[in-house]
Length: 325
Ligand SMILES: [Zn+2]
Image (cartoon, rainbow, N blue to C red; front, side, top):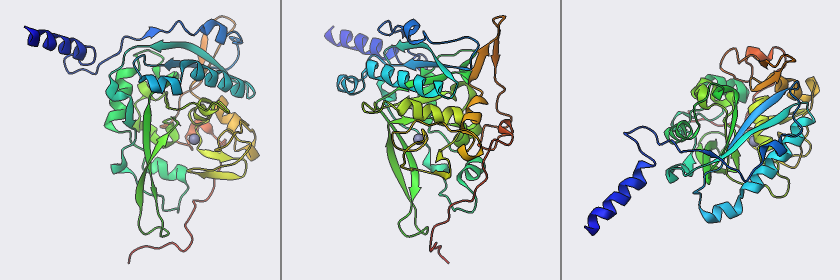
């Protein structure tokens, strides 16, 4: 009898996550701890707007919730609103939702290293990415498909998914390009931008941004990740061409404390690219939603959507580059 009770409890526990082999879909509910009306008090319907939903699982480990509390996430979002308002784009908080989530999704390796290729530097990283787009891991595809609710505006909405550990990989060399080692990096935020993944990320989940840390000094993680997603650029600023990790001051897209979104050719068209983002819409005087056009190809950096709002630059070759004969 005792055994039977235990079994029933186990089955009940499982049924919350697995239903007939289908991905377990959490029963997301609006989290009333956040008043989105107050957060959105600045929204003007005629201005360029991006909708953002925030998912904060309720059963994250308590020690994690202390490190990344919901109010900290909201402070990050408020900071992002300020940063993007300087560039004429307003962030509209659709809702914050919470639910119990299958804990296997709390920590994921997001990228699939099997298909990754080191940079050989003959073309720049944006061109290389369009030739060999980054693939998401099975675990990431499964998690985002299960966690993001179906909606007709999925592909035009940004979803901030608070998780505990999201890891991604890149290749590194310590002998100038002969031997390459895959390195796994723990991310604070990861934006899954189209310039990396192209058609490898399904439209329905392409708006996902994971958040696994909170920057209690600058509150800049969400703003920076939104920069990747909405401007569709890597770590670059003014005359600085992109590389994996570039530390510097001033620009939102460098590693540092900067929040600048520059414009014009010298600003690498950041502001102009932002305003062309398919995630932007505005409400007309008659109350109609007017959404920006979508990517023409698959959303790589040189997608025709951007016209001449692109920068052409050389790839970065290693000095004294070696290869095995
Ligand atoms: Zn970044």
